[in-house]
Image (cartoon, rainbow, N blue to C red; front, side, top):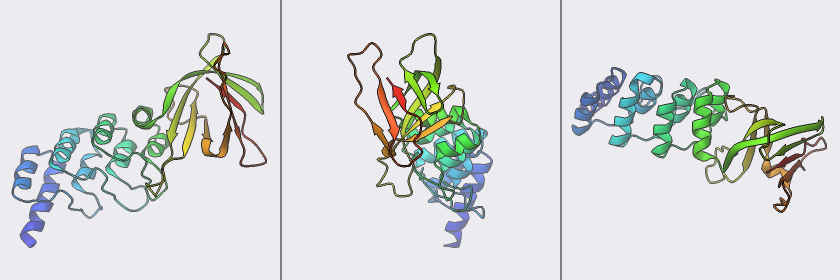
Amino acid sequence: MGQQQSKDELLHQYVTCANVEGIKALHREGAGLEWIDKEMNTPLITACISFELYNVAMTLIELGANVNAYRPGRHAGTPLHHAAKQGLEQTVKLLVNHGANALLMNDDFQTPVDVARTNGNNNVVRAIENHICLFSGWLREEVSSPEFHQVFAPRLPSRRVWVVVVPIGSRNLANTSKLELAIYSSVLDANPRTLIALWKSNVEEPYFNQPDPTVTISNISNSNPIPVLLCV
């Protein structure tokens, strides 16, 4: 058992020095891929903290490392949480393309996209949203009062906003059916200007026979409703 543990630990050390061939050789000899160091990091989590370790992360995934391995504690989470925090766009894409769950919350109740937003990593926000969104695109906004504004189909005169509809994260991955509307002032922004819980909203049927088809979205959950939105 002690010898097996030393192989696992050595593999983890090879991760930090980007020794891909050493990792492969130790794995062939039976070294595990989920050994946890004193920081509670698996080899893959360690590889997802540094841009220089992208090839190591790819190797570990190809060898069968758990892309959803969880590190507990504050500011922790899965390999995807760590890559999102560091702004590692290519590592993020590698993880989600190999089954990393982008809706899993960490101990701070943040999904990877929440972590990317908090750290201002707009490239990672876009990468994750593109992977999980039901809709994204430019719409046109026109504000008529503090309580009412409209978002129309793209046309020249009005202010444009970037809109994304995504499922929200959950600690219970059997329940991820709730949707959220995120409105950004620009596609370059990491943080949305407005977040609307669609499961708490009333969504009216759009009229597609109109020149500018719209759908009205209004909050039905409290006495201070959010602004009414008219979207394509």
